[in-house]
Image (cartoon, rainbow, N blue to C red; front, side, top):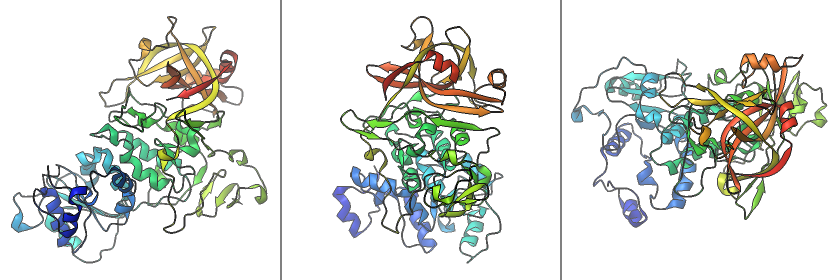
Length: 528
């Protein structure tokens, strides 16, 4: 085992850094920093006490600040800590490096570094990065990339100031978050993280904590298990693209089935189309890095969700309400309300709204915006530690419906097990809706089957679509839409009960009129 910082050797590290058994990648990084005239270097294993859990947790959630305030991030895109970096010193060079035919973006996307869950935070927040691949070196900053041989890149690094002339639309470096909760931006991070790999399942929360810690400054209430508190009704509508499986942590906090974090997606991103379609409050936003606005999802047809449930989080001993207030002002859409009726900080701008914190953004309706933190005097919510437990407690309507797994949804170019898509039928054997099972093989293995292929569903919200659908195929949408080309439905979860706790096994939609006719029982639910 190579040398790393422990409580037992802190004093020795403070005196001088031992180089005995130091991995070659660390030594090469130190050499490079010295060559570039950079005095200090941050390496997690020799800067964070590895056997002090409290210190590690605190540093991990602040890693975004480490990357964003560093002059340069050194990325060992291939190999491991023992491999070293392709040498930039001709006297130490043992292999000839050449210019690859692939672009910088292609090299990054194909690298092992890009698949690791832990590296997403450095990908997002580093201001400048130099990447070391097997046969080339590349540089990336907020507006330029360089690539080629070590000598050509080093000449540019040591050549004094150079004007950035080209944009890097796919890079996430030097990103500035808007001062308001941008659910579309967050959805992009979640999709990318869900497809990445972790060696240890217990790292699921910590590896993403640096991102949610920063975004908690602009998201009222912060996050719980990767779910934005203010938009919990929307967040529960995540869907799989292919068959997924549960993550089982060895120690608390355990990951609940209702969160996307509670499942392995096996290299295929979680489907957050409904998140992005429901987050329809942004008309135009220019905040952030160049090219980000082009990534914003633009729904071809409206998807309007209506909250119907009051949520709480509990561990049975204590209970805390969930303030899912993200959509509370949506009724102001298109209304000519006087400024006195608007939330603090909001004003009208023609047919839209603007907030004092960002005059470059136009909104279709106001949303809750956190007061800006005082410099150095604000600590965002602490996430999971701020709530008593992973159980969602609420009252809602429930019903048993006939189902038929009639088709599968296979993700393109992937070998993962296909996704089981089910049709829902009412008591009269008429089409009532559709749903996606999380596990393609759950089917008749579910304990909820009573011999007549009936599953239990619970309502989590209602929604309306117009002139098209994100959840039903075109034929069914046109068959059931009204004269205004609209369709009303209930967002439901397929649940499986184990004792007094229910677990999420699928997500779907059932026609509102069918649900109201058949699902009349209101029950208390503990969703784990």
